Image 1 (tube, helix red, strand yellow):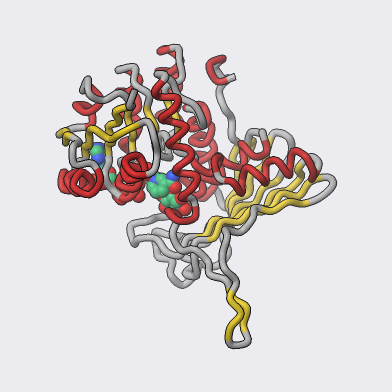
Image 2 (tube, rainbow, N blue to C red):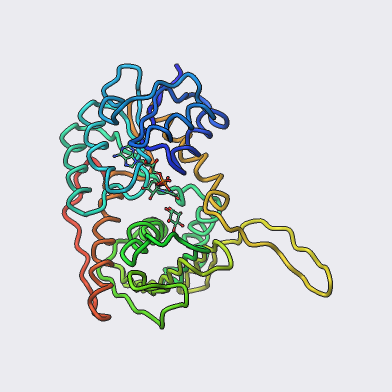
Length: 336
Ligand code: NAI
Ligand code: ISE
């Protein structure tokens, strides 16, 4: 059976996920598209899915009997109602990060899924599928001994003018929030934010860079540097220090060129290239599970846990360096 997918939100990542479903992955095709800006849906249809129907609203797409499973790739603030509608329709749904822009919103999704009684939601935390992070997790479990410290960095070359301070958490650091919780098999208990002086490309609504310090239930201290206008490239770093040794996320493969008395290797500039293989694997995983009417991978609970930590980090951005507590509600049995 070919899984028939509907995509809501045909911007950058909706376009890229449609391309991979149509051209790279197996077992699925895109049959429906929707976007508040219809020209974006038309452009994705014309480029990748000429047979797809365009729906005036995401709700109409979810309700269509042609659509077996849904991809939500619209702006973060619009994710919650679409995911809730997909659960109400009993359809598997892949939701790009963030699952919701508030912890309450993510909690409502968890409650709806628990009431439905079966996992239908996969959150787009693709780093869990990255070969480098998988190897790092294995090294931590097998070699470094119990983790004590983590040093991480998330650097983007540049962001649009509309990108403001809290987005460094909800839009950007949300990836570290999820992947480090998964890597350490631990939960967060507090967050603090420290700022150095502003980099020159910051503005009144964007403090950049910033350093978030997370503490976990097992007592691990994590520092994450977020620098979204770092200029030189897209650079994701992570080092775990344990009782017996330290392990680092490998650099992406790059050719070293010795030329003109220099030894140089290029650095990527785009998240699409840095995580291209992980996006492929996560969506293939979604297709396989959705074809059986279920979901796998990062759960709505993971999306909720990330949203709670993100809310605390945003609060900590305003707390003058004071720690803000992170508390999860009780985990429903569906997610054990
Ligand atoms: P974008 O701005 O390029 O595209 C978003 C699209 O959604 C636009 O075409 C917009 O018209 C449409 N849209 C907005 N509200 C809508 C609504 N209510 N219903 C239907 N369509 C609507 O944004 P981008 O970069 O594609 O991001 C989309 C989502 O994917 C965000 O949540 C973002 O955080 C996430 N994302 C995840 C990445 C990852 O690494 N996993 C990378 C980039 C984005
Ligand atoms: C973008 O939305 C992503 O998810 C990228 O992975 C991240 O690096 C970037 O900062 C976000 O804006």
